[in-house]
Each structure stands twice: as C-alpha cells, then as structure tokens.
Length: 330
Length: 242
Image 1 (cartoon, rainbow over the protein chains, first blue to last red):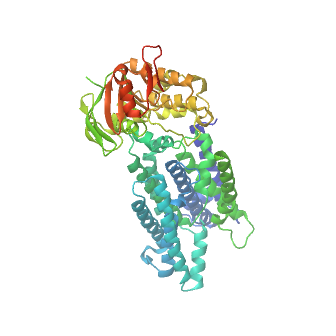
Image 2 (image 1 turned 90 degrees about the horizontal axis):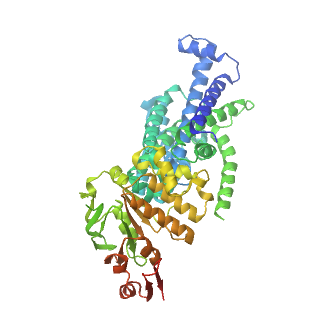
Image 3 (image 1 turned 135 degrees about the vertical axis):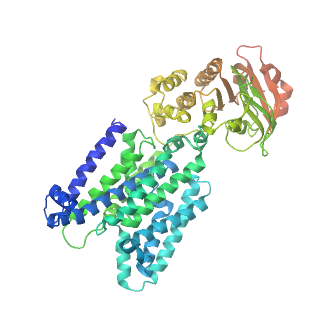
C-alpha cells in the first residue's frame, strides 16, 4: 500500500511532468525553458509569446481549476459521506453559470474588463451558495443535498429563461461554448480569482479535516469527540462553494473531475477523508491539465471543449460506480 | 467525589428530573424498556443536545468545559455506529484520538489490546462480523482514554461469547480508576457486571441501587409489564421473563 506521503510525492512529480508537457505540446515546437526565461525577463520573441502568454496561462488555469475541483470533490464526499456526490451538487456551478450568462446578455461588470465573466460567475456562485446555506440550515447531509438541488434547479431555470430571450445568436453561442468548459483563451489575470479562491476555499476545508475524518463514523460520534458538527459542516460547504464557484467562473463546467478524482485516490490514502484532500487537489490538477493536453493533440479544427471531454470520460466511470455501489447494497 | 453527577436533569419530555452519580471504579447499568430514555441520558451526559438541570464532571459544571476538554474526559459509544468508508481497523481506532488532536501510538495500541482486537487490525471494517465490529467501536472510544466511558447497548446483536468479552472489557476498564455507564437490555448481564443499576421508565429514574435492590419482581413487573424470574443467588445471576 502506497502511504499518504508517497502518493502526494508521486502526484507532485506527475504534476511537474504534466506541466512541462503542457508548456511543450502545441502546433509549434518551441523550447519550453528558453521560452519561459525569455518571457520572464521580458524579452519579446516568438518563443516567449507562445510559451509565456499562450501556453502558460492555459496550463496554470488548468492546474488551479483541476486542483479546486479535486479538493472540493474530496471535501464534499467526506462531508456528505457519499462517494457519489459531485461538487456541482451544492448549486455553485449553476449559480456561476447564471452569473456569467448575465454578463453575456446584459453586459454587466464591464468595468472588470476581461474578468467580467469571472467576477459575475463568482458572484453568482456566492449568491447561490448563500441561499443554499440559508435553506440547508444546520448543514446536515440530507438537507445540503436537497437545498443544493433546489438552488441548482432554480438557477438552471433562470438560465433557461436567459437563453430563451437571447438578444442575438452570437451571444448565445458564446455562452454555450463557455458553459461547455475550457481553459483556452483565458488570460493570466484569471489567476487573480483562482489563486485566492484556492487559498481561502482550501484553507477553510483544511481547517475542518478532523471533522471530515470523524464524520466517517457519523455525526453523533463526531460531536461526542468534541467537534462542532454544524458549524464545521457549514465551513466545509462554504469552502467548497468558493472553490467550485471560482473554477466554474473561470473555466465553465468541467464535469466529473470532482467525482472521479477522490475515487481514484481514496484507496491510496487508507480511505481517510482528511488524508484525501491534498492528494485529490494534486490529482485533479494532473487530470485537468492532462485532459487539456489531450484536447490540444486532437486534429485541428473545431476544438473539442475540455468539459465535454471530461464528461465523455467521466460518465462511463460514473455508471461503473453506480453499478458497483448498487451491488454492494444488494 | 463523584466522577459524574446529575442534579434534576431533564431533557424536554424525554428525561425527567434525573439525579444520579457515577463513581470511579464503578460500572453503572442503565436498564429500562425501549424509549425509557437510556440513550438520551447517555447522549446528554456526553454533551450532546440541550438539557435543563446540572451535570457535574468532577464537581465542575459540564458547561465550564470546552467541547474538546469534555471529549477527553467523557467518551461516548452510541448504539448505532457505522463507518461509511472501508477503513482498516487501526484507522478507525486512530480516529478515537480526535479529541486530543494527535495519533498517540501508545494509546492506540493499548486500546487495541484492551478490546482484544490485535488479530485483525489490518482488516477493513466492512469485512468484520458484528461481534468483531462491536469490539472495534469499543477500541475506538478507549483510544481517547476517557475517564468516564458511556456505552449504549454494546452487546445488542452480538453472540454470547462476544457479549461476555465486551462486558469484561468494560468491567476491567472501570477497575483502573475510570467510570463506566452502560445501557443494557439483557438484565442477567446487568446483574452480573454492574455494581449499581438505574432503572428508567418514561424518562424517570424509578429505582437506583445495587442489582439486589433494583432487580425485584414487583418493580420489574411494574416497569416492563411482564413477570420475571429472578435468581441473584445463582452464579452467574439470571433474570428472565416468565
């Protein structure tokens, strides 16, 4: 059995490899290291622009988005004690989508410039989340799922209304493509949202790691061991929403990462929800960055959106999980 | 000085004016029909849920302790425990250190030894029998080294071999200057292992005292509404419905 330290170590090595690969892969072959150093020192040439301004933002965004999704999935599955839970479940994804849609249609937040969609997405996620926390009350698992479902449904309906009254087909196309999920054509300024979100959301979740572990034995046991179950649950949900909101508002919907990653990693962390958090973040980063490299390697033409690819790969895995879980209960 | 004492403890309609105390070295049995308030009493003593009246822990009010301090002093093993993740036995026992925020290997190994589960620490919890699992849950709570151990129905759904082994673990734990409160349905086991018994009915303490004082035919007839055969002279004592 690979211990927690070594799985973290291996994932870290994989992350470095996949980062380098992501900077290297593309339609033009340029030296990665040379390009990076030129870009860092402000030398303007082809390789500096290609590596520093096209591939680097894409790579970093893929890593942070993947990390956020991986960790939020691990946290939420631990909190709700259900391996079939997905971060989108707290309603943050739909909220972010609705926020972003309002930018595409109503031109809100034009002061934020290229970050307008991201800012609106994040706000949408936070509003959805606040409503969800309000509805779910104590943060009990069943209530979180119900409240998340309710908020997702409302936000989804509002999104449908916005689509229905689309002012022009281009705006609609732009929005739909954005919703499909991608990390291409995002500037480095997206990191101003992603990095703080990852630190804050990740920090909130990390502060409750003991609760996540203890909840494996049920709320009563966790509370009897001196943990504040209700307060801690809300902190975890808040952290998750910050992570998911930021990820969705930057990259659109990249499905199944939050579901899949904790599953792949869990056996290597002795099934301890607390020990799963960091490896899941790393594995999520590796997975999304790797999937993005795959998308770029496909024949030139209309690019397959990253979110579409992860859903295509994730859905069969999900079905397999359902079948396996079903067998366990039979 | 009592380890735990309650004064006029009430919990909405479930517990009514309970005043009991637990001494160090003592196993106190809670008996009574379903719904009598045994679980509510144990949960309340462990600091879960609201109550009126006073609970004193070593003569200080329970509310003066932080939840972590309380959890280090009082360990609760609820009646229904499941582990949703297929963790190894050792990982489950390690979780018992949560109140202390450490992974004290000595305490964990000691708890494993006390509960007699050395043979299967590497196995996962979902591959154990009911009797083995009952002892793992016990090891989990023992790993926290609580001075007051509250156990709710530890021998329900457990075969007679494991029933005795679990009850012996509790008795021995009490011997080393700790206190144990255990809720039991099996009155023969209660008579055999508990120093004192508290008989509950509809949230009220109907009788409190030694097994000889509490286990008498008219009292049990009144509480359980059936007649029972009692032979406390016999070794081991038996209390059976007629």
